[in-house]
Length: 208
Image 1 (tube, helix red, strand yellow):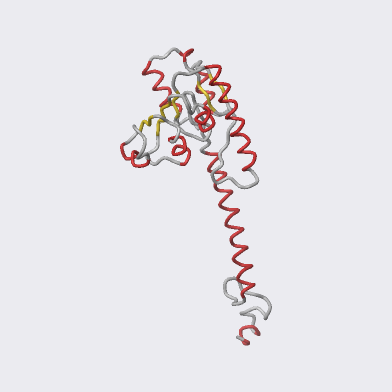
Image 2 (cartoon, helix red, strand yellow):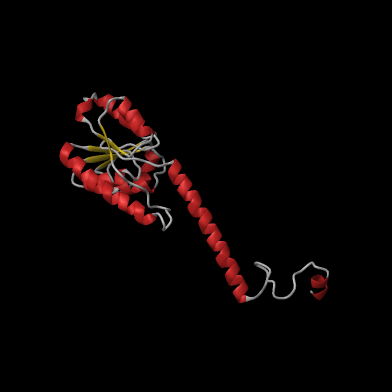
């Protein structure tokens, strides 16, 4: 050991080697530092993923990335509903609003934000957005008074689902393995429509 220090292969006493030095305080500081770095990395990746897959809600409720829009449009076409008898509720901005308004379907936006995997700095603001989304949804339901609601997932659907708790609703699950938002919405839906029977295992107590 002394020879290694002299020739410069190892540091002098007092310079701890991360994950190698036996000192308890050294190991504690090293592990704490690694934990902080890994947590920063995890939160950053979660936020980027959330931004890429931001979802939205509907009274025909769609996803903000546009993927949930098409099943809802299919329902409208299949039922041959008059556009004035439908109100589309979704997130502010994004491709969803563009696609819906292009078809001249009535559209209203509500504020909302995700809370899963969000850092502590953003969490209070996102909760506040969900609360504002709930009150906005309540006003929309009172004015439009829909007979039934269709959800296709996403955190923006959550305020509307809570506000419409006593109204009939259908949740369409586009994913084989539903995410947290879809599982949360399933608690409020009267019935669930699945893309594949494999997804039924995730909703054992709900009629489909």
